[in-house]
View: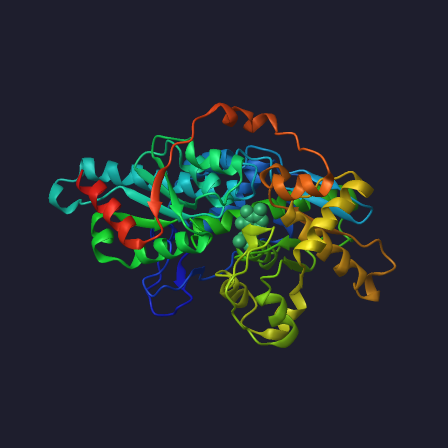
Amino acid sequence: MQYYSLGKQSPNVNFKTAAITGQAPDKGLYFPTTIPQFTPAQIERFKTLDKATLAFEVMKPYVGGTIDDASLQQICAETINFDFPLVPITQTIASLELFHGPTLAFKDVGARFMSRCLGYFSKQASAEKATSIDKSTSTEKPTTVLVATSGDTGGAVANGFLGVDGVDVIILYPKGKVSPIQELQLTTCGQNITALEVEGSFDDCQAIVKDAFMDAPLNKAYNLTSANSINVARWLPQQLYYFFAWQQWVAKYGNDLPMHIVVPSGNFGNICAGMMAKASGLPLGHFVAACNANNVVTRYLQTGNYEVRKAVATVSNAMDVGNPSNFVRILEIMQNNFENLKHALSSYSYDDITTASTIHRVYKTNNYILDPHGAVAFLAAEDFLDKLPTTDINKFKGAIILETAHPVKFPEVVEEAIGQTIEIPKSVQFLLDKQKVSIPMGASFAAFKNWMLTKANA
Ligand SMILES: *Cc1c(COP(=O)(O)O)cnc(C)c1O
């Protein structure tokens, strides 16, 4: 299995190189040269396979031999060692709860897989160095992961990479703009994880990271890589929970009822992974991208014009993305054909007031607490099911929404909407006793670069 750059100007690489470098030299995103095809017999077997084995069989073709089977089995088992329950909310809408991982976010899956892959490659590099006769040829620098976060990514990446040998992580987050639990998840790890508290916005953090990847002295001093969904090692394992959801769906409804899927979308990595799973043979239904006011894709599907706008701040802030980086991958899966795309994907967009009132309504009516991202998805599921064509009408129709984060991570919005406090899950209560450790940083690339270069020379 090779990966080509969607920029079309860089050579093909294997999974290892794609995972270590993140982006191709031409700044394109990597995409597999062939999408693996699972046969109907394999799909039938997948119905009852245990999660770890299923994860291994799905990921193996993508890893393409760059990780030995025993290690990949272990990486997969560790990546998914928590629950992915499909919980009914109404008669027709169920929630795939992706917040049972260590940082209560779906990003745990991608971060855990990617960190373990980089850890494996780093160990491999030191072993090669130790046995190399000509020491002068081995100038491996440790890998440094740079990541800007509006909240969820940072925690998942910190937790995933904590203690991974040969990989350092530097997280930039906007001071005062992440929730208390999110801040504790970012700032209490220690060891190989450093949190920079930036006097600015998420956009400022992201701009600093972007500049860093382009900066020659920094790239000389460090082996920099990114941990966002551009990286194939973070993007591709997100396919797994679509397989787990489908297992639960067919156990309940059998083969005949299509499982339509609504995904709260920002950078479109998550939904794109689901569309890959479908392209590889998993019998999934229609995909719906649920968006907040940042609705470039919703408008594109309506008008055919892809018109990028600057991101605006919303209550579902993990989806505040003006120009979704993974959308080019979706276009590639759809063979860059607009009709194919419209056939496979719909999109709806909602404002903050509707989102908050939906959290209230679903709590009162169905006794289920949605987070703001899940609430946007719930709205889209209702609208989608309303408009589902008559061919499906004789059958029961239903959809799942991906609940991408635990509501406790967005207490301001959710507690206001439901009129009570949310209990902090046991699994994160230990954070409350921990001491935040962060390094204050001005919102300028110059300040960041200076700090990085001083650190490299220390
Ligand atoms: C990251 C995130 C999203 C958006 O996922 P994409 O893959 O960027 O589309 C949605 N919800 C939550 C809670 C997130 O953290």
